[in-house]
Length: 182
Ligand SMILES: [Zn+2]
Image (cartoon, rainbow, N blue to C red; front, side, top):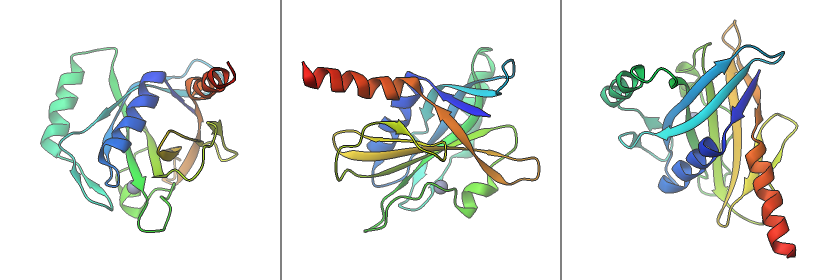
């Protein structure tokens, strides 16, 4: 299983997390599930933040009425459907943002969907965007350090890390490097 993150979705995830930092953001992942290849893929085309999510330092309370309105709106657009959700985990005092789902996060997870946790911390030094051995993706922007981790649920209801594929993020770094040497 692979979670493919488009350029659009990549920026959506980062901007949503930065906007409310150091509070947590919450939103929906819009796209489709591609079952054709050898590796089943979740194609994440958009990351749509919930402006009405109640934000706390630890945890996000989503607004069920707003959620239903968005689901209803999307039902009329056949090529877009909700394939999961995302939220951020942020630094808390000196402790770095976790990349694993909390017990509350796990309660809301279902087998059909994919979940992205955006861990966001203050940036200490510049780190090139790259894939990690555990399937997550990390890197820095001017002010923040990010780690994007995707999860799906196994048939027995266990969370499983899902490999993220985001060619844009990797290319984005390469272009910055190219600009720097010019
Ligand atoms: Zn969480």
